[in-house]
Structures are given as C-alpha cells and as structure tokens.
Image (cartoon, rainbow, N blue to C red; front, side, top):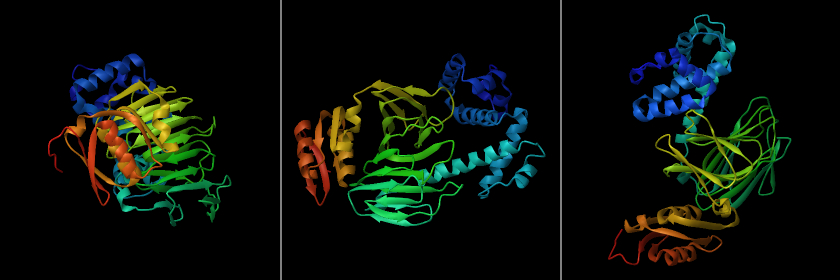
Length: 401
C-alpha cells in the first residue's frame, strides 16, 4: 500500500495489490497492518470496508473482471436498486453492466443490496414498546397474538403446520421461495420456539426473532434483536447463522446465549458448549473470532472493538430457569434486566451508576420481592408508584428523581 493511503479513494483500494491479496486471503500479518492503519486513520473505515466487501463478494463469484469495472458495476447496480426497485432482472441489470458477461455476479450483487435493505428495515421498524402481548407474524400476513407469559411456538418438520401453546395452526405449503416469520416478545414475557430443523430458541423479554418457516438447502439464517439462548441442531451441510445489529455468529451445532438489545452499548455472546465463529461488527474484514465454551465476546455497538474473556456460562443462561445470576455487575445493568423482565419502569440516582453488585434473583417472585433483594445486596432502597420505580443508595442524601 502506498505511503499516501490515508487519502485513498475506493478505486485506490481496489487497485492496491496487497490490499486485494489480503481481502481474499485474510493473511494475519497483513490483518495486523490494516488494524494499525484503521486505528491511525479512522476516517477511512467506511471506504476501507466497502472496498473489502466488493473484493470478497465478487471473489466468491470467481470473476475475472478487473477491479475498476467491478466498481463501476457495483455503483450502477446499487444506484438502480436504491431507486426503489425490489428486484433486478438479468436483462435490466445487464444494461447497467455495459455488456459485461457476469450473470452470477449480478445476481450476487442484487442479493447483497436486498440484504442491506432488509437489514436496515429489521433494525429500524421494530419498537417493542408497541406490543403488550407476544405476537407471531406469519409469512402469509397473519398476525397471531399470544396471551401466555411463557409461550411456546413449534414448527413441525413438514413445514406446513405450527403449534402455538399447543394449538395447531396451518401454514401454506412450503415453496422454493423463502419467506420470513417474526416472533415478537415484549417486556414482561418470554417465549420458546422450536424451528423446523428442531433447533430450540428461548427468547427473553423485549426480544424479536426473524426466521423462515423452512430453511433453504445450504444455510439456516435468523436475525435477533434482544436476548436469546440457542440450542442448534447439528447439520454439517447447513451452517446456522445468527445475525444481530453488529455481529454475525455461525455454528454447526452448539448451545450459546446472545444478548443484543438496541438500547445497550454492547452485544454479548456466551458459548455454553460446542464452537462458534463470530464476526464482530459485521464489517466483513479480518479474521472471525473462534469462541470456546465458557468464553464471552463483547462487541462495542459504537465502534469495531471487541473483547474476549473467560466466564461461567451458567451465569448468563440462568434466566431460562427463572434466575438472574450476576457477579460484580454494574447495578444499572441489573435494574435494567429486572425492568425488562417485569415490564416496569426503573430509574436510578447518579450514585447508583457506580455501584457494583453480586447475587442471585429468583424471577418467580413478584417484582417488589425482587427489588427488595436488589436493595439488600446493594445497600439501597427504592420507591414505587404504579410500576414506576426510583432506586437510590442508602448513603445518599435526599436524592430526588
């Protein structure tokens, strides 16, 4: 890479031999170099990642077109799609591609822009506060409200019937077109879903899962917002992929917990058993993180940084059994989890921000009993009026809301 790489445009990255070689191979030595490059010139991150995506995507299609022509195609196809076109036919796209005979590449690029738009819709259209009941949105447009606090949804293997809390619901016959269902679990509720491949997923309060009623032949993809515990059924021919706003997790068969709430400053993934590969930031550059049992990966939601640490996985999955276990956790984090689970509003004093606590909460109790336990372990107290709570420490003087 030339000395003036801080001034690189997209075309310059695509013309750089070392950059292209690294993007195709993820050579660890070059990866270290580019990490240093981005730390020194963070303003280049957007251009850097876009160039990386172009090379990886088109490399996957085994193209021989030179990078500049690929870039021209990329921009033209992207512009065409962003004008509101839901699909890109081969005939129309070939006109933009100026006669370059790379049909498979065009299909891949069209898919990429569709995926980008779907991902943005997934992140912005969802507001858990709009729901007081658990809701299942089927791919045929039906919206099924679910009254129970701990609901269950099971897809039968044939893909044409589900059971919601034991009640059978018919689905359209499975087709080659993959449509998506959505399970929305508001605050104060939890749910378990068994997918058609027998993968089991527990959804915690304030979560949303987007998934197909039947999986494609070569992959199993779902999207998560909130917290979920996964027990993935092993299938060597079809990796299971969980996408959050900032991470991409790929597994074959394993158990793990993911916490990815949009109102928190980090995403947390904890592996219980098996092995997972995690791509932090979904930036598609650098090597994926290979996570081992009892390891936690924390991905910062505001930048590309992440951390890996050793933990007790049970601490992060105990909510499935109605327990919150926490060791040296910030008090606001504990209060936020309690607020989600019981669908109550909790505010706290500035002094409580700095308090670190350890303990165990039995979520089978009512919220007042749980708050009493939090007050005991934190040396605090609280006031409550119509499910609105204010929490402070006992050594504070007249702290008001």
